[in-house]
Length: 259
Image (cartoon, rainbow, N blue to C red; front, side, top):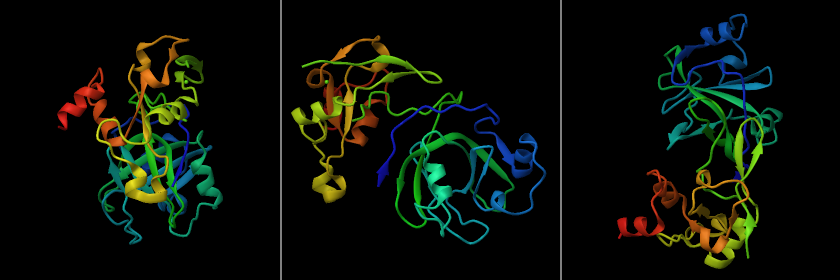
């Protein structure tokens, strides 16, 4: 499994999220002549340096391929073409963190209409054949891709919360935060004690999320975060549950909820 860093992307808004489009509609919007074959009809295609993915969800495609394309939470598990590997130039281009990917899905291969899921990007990809991807999506206004707000990617005190301008403002995470937090607390989830390496062996080695107790959007630029006081290692399940409420649940509250 290979994980990609989260970067912001931006694109001119062409499509409306959750609206239905036929391929003919898409060609019209892009000012393309109507296509009757080729890559536009076989899962995905590149046009003007942006990708367009057409995925059959929970059903086989017209070519008979029945990949396990499905939503896992808010993320889409999607498979590339069976004869494409991780080294195929097209796959390398899709993995590019700055690549805009327009995602259309349908549940019946006989339906000419796809639902536009929004602009996505590759969060993770797996070196399999066909290549398996986890795609994540931006907000309703298509401003960019967001992780769980308080996840700190790979701080004594370390500067945290510095605002950086890309296409929108994002909070800059100090890359030493995760290391310092885990050195102190270890790799067990602070809520449920789950340890990835104990369950998955070498695959789970050093894997854990890091939760920011003081939510980043509540702090200003130049805030100095203490990795021992302000951060905790948590598994992805508990991390998601912490953020089921705004403001987020505390570590103690969630521990009480699960007994």
